[in-house]
Amino acid sequence: KQLSITLTDSVTTLVNTYQFTFTRSLSKDVSLQSLTVDGYKSNGETIPLKLNHSVHDEPYDLFEILDVPADVDTITIQANPTNANAQVQQGLGEFELKPGKNIFSIQVQAEDQAVPVQQYQIVVTRKLGLLDLKVGTHVIDLSKPSTDWDGSQVYRINEPFEAADLTHDLKATPNHTSVTLSGNINRTYELEPGTHRISFEATAQDGITKQQYHIEYTRTPSTDARLKILNL
Image (cartoon, rainbow, N blue to C red; front, side, top):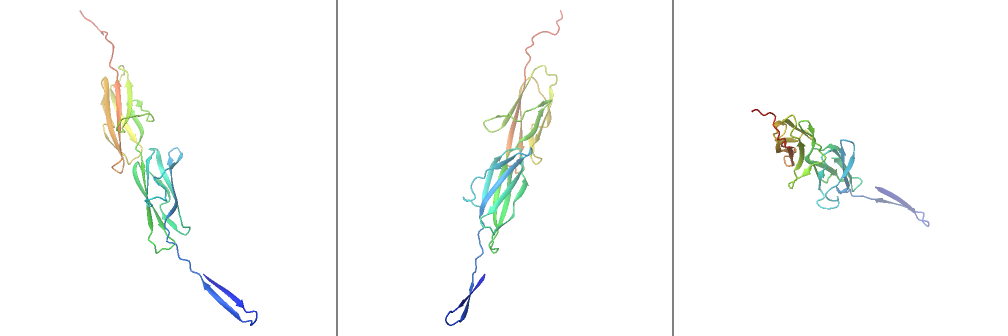
């Protein structure tokens, strides 16, 4: 920017003009002033998700969010650069969140475009879950599992001996189509009196995040000692 100043000598009436040139260096700052991530559940509820550290703490370019609830389907990422003339080129907005580990990237371009673009990574891990679990005509309440010492979830069903049907279809639906179920699931069982422990596993799309499930089905043995018929 140029600035001109004209001065007139009051005695000699000579006029002198001075020109000043001001040059501001372009900012090389690619840091973030703020970074927020919100989760959205299928019922419309919004929950703020907590980063593992502040944007002002190291490592400045890597953030992690763990144990996002299983029913969070999407997230929104918002970020503001420290320098008002820097620009976030990509990585903001709404994104699908799959169960397991998800990696999102933000790119910031400094005002001085000769500076390399800075990339920030956000690793978000969503829990595995089930949309439904059925044993025969029993629809299991998924909100009340017991938890074993290893973190596996246990659901218990008790049925009287007089139950008419010994054959049950065991069916489960994971909380996302990217999740695979393996083990003793989506098949038919003949459950005799006694306690049966049926196990299966859910694996997320990252191949690392897994959740074990157990169903303890108890069919009470009969206490009826009466004779149906006696012939002499």
